[in-house]
Image (spheres, rainbow, N blue to C red):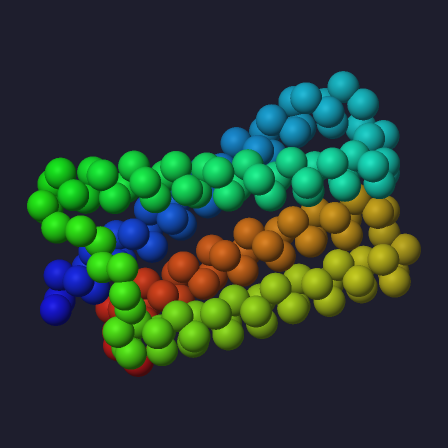
Length: 152
């Protein structure tokens, strides 16, 4: 039973680390490709729309590939499959961490709207919206790891 939760923690940790790496790589790519040459791009709404629409499939595909690689490596090392079903405790942990994640996302959304209300540049709002997505994902993963270790 304990090893099942340990494997789930490892899967969450891999997801957390990959999310952070993908985010950093994407920020560096966008900055070097678009913003470094022309900082006025930050106020271009079309740029932000394209950035979001490119980021979403990049994250999805990268996460799928990383989870497949993790499952293969896990199978080779432990000779066991990753549990496909979650028990009641796992579901409760997911629900509690999801609730925390949504609160974080809501706070960032309110900050983004406050930035608009206080007449900040438009790019501040978009940076806060992107940050809300990633911070909520990171906080959700950290909460899951915490609850798996501490218990509910």
